[in-house]
Length: 206
Length: 267
Image 1: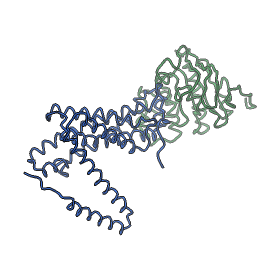
Image 2: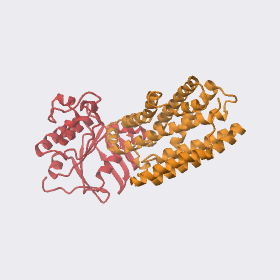
Image 3: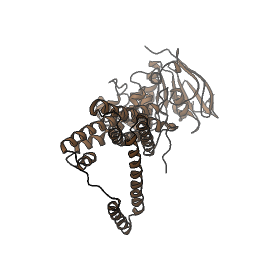
């Protein structure tokens, strides 16, 4: 059963971002680009309610301030650019016991018994995506989810992610730089310029 | 048995030896001669003053004077807890959390020990109350300061881990749980070690003093066991309370990690 809740931001303000209004439809992937330091990561952190901010956010009928912080973040799941691993075993980080998409991400089930220290940075990044989808979220905020991956792996991971997002019906904000990737996965593409969101010019690669 | 009186000139002999030690450290260029002498002078002056205060207090033996002395000791201990932390909570919270935790644990355990177990007449008799409270506060202070320092420094070092756990929908308690437990452990370790080594490696100071003052060793031992338990209770509950209060303060009502509530370490 795909989710049918939209993610809605109203006058969201943090740092240099003054008033971000945005509605993401269920299953939509909105790619967000912008110069480094433009505030993309802070915008995601504000939507996940990890930093004090102005404005409001809803997922469907649920308003951010109406539920405790951890419940909101269980719904609106942020995957940071650099993942953290705090336990000895990989499997300890999957409390629900299931790790979605392991095969598509290039792992077999044995990876859950690996010590974390054995993981390369690319493996950590892919496993962090699987970890963030278990249990299933209500919306996704992805901060450069394929930044440390080679081309072939990037294609495989983004294809798996895009299909999981459409199947799950999760409104998704995806921070990305590569125009080719944006062309492949985005339903819409916005740029963050001078503290404002604006629809990106269609690039020649499209 | 009467205690052999000590005259000031006899102490001066011991002081001369300290000066000799300072001269040796200066000769060895340890750079500690000065601080050694200053610390020795502080010991002399502070203890002489406290002796005067205690003489007056014992003569008066009024509840409000005992309470005032206890309050003074508590506030100085609170200041010391703040001074021993590298990154402390801003806005008076470091002092408030440490002092409140020490007040709750040390005072309630001390009052309980005095009224229920030892039972002097009146219960606040300063000969019992002040040394008991002093020993408890001294140890609780160490535990609370260690635990708070470990907590705030751990939260700072592992901020990315805490935030990643929050992003996965964990509550603030889960997200900082391991750091909290680690901080509580480090606060409790010194008293556990002291209990384990008591009598085998070290003869505790209070027991030694009582024996020197002519108490039968069997009685001194009973008092020492009681004091060790009281110290453990005070330190234990004080540490638990301080870590619980301070870790809550690291997060806001939306369960966000708010490290700007910690001051930067002094350089």
